[in-house]
Length: 246
Image (tube, rainbow, N blue to C red):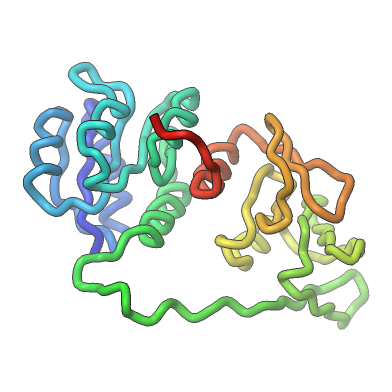
């Protein structure tokens, strides 16, 4: 179990997170508070793995709280203001959840935290989870025909209403009778990420992130980063970003 706390100066925001945590079996809620100073004492006196932390609070900002705990606990920021995302990632937060936080978005952040935190009772020597299958079969417009696609060959996927176009490193465009959301749920999250309502990309093929666009190998196309997907995308990219620590 991952021991977690919630710090937010609005009780209704705490109540929503309490509800989400109650539906997440690997999270153990230890403490909630509207007072970040009180929460800071808890982090300093107990083994807290994860903090769900608001950014704007009257007595202490979330960024100040992160600096005060000095890496003792991992942090997921929760806020209504997207402009704090970059500063959060600069301070090594695991994820950035925009309010109001849906359970689907919450569980993605919680699963990300689980990949960074060794839960109490586990040891690093435990066997890793079974690897994902390395291929999928997709249904085409031709009745009864299924095409095998090797996951390492996929560069990006574009949603086309009731279809998707799967673009491979060999230059193929495979049109499959699939919904992009269903395909997103089937693909391994560590290797693929949604950047836009119409696009999923393979992270291994990223050559450049430029503003709100992503450049990929083996294609002249640039892929947009939608406002809804920017924070989770940058959270996934953050451990690869090299910067000077001051």
